[in-house]
Length: 108
Image (cartoon, rainbow, N blue to C red; front, top):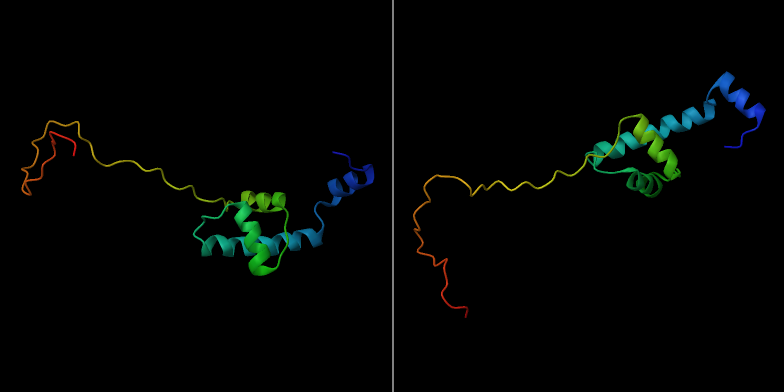
């Protein structure tokens, strides 16, 4: 990255500017509100879109990613479907009460 010596030294000496830290704190609060409202299902692209549409705040993709990651507000992944039926067992099969025909002799 190309950064001037003065900017690098100032950042190393004084840290992040107050203006940026206030803006980040405000965005962090809004992101928290969005994640609570949406049950932590929104990732950073959706968070960014919600910030712009609902709150009128503009944030870059990288800023949305950084703030969600730094504050542990990452989206929850959808659980994978696991079938509950296990047909490989030695138990007795229930009686066919409805008298349904499962074995067809001719396609019709």
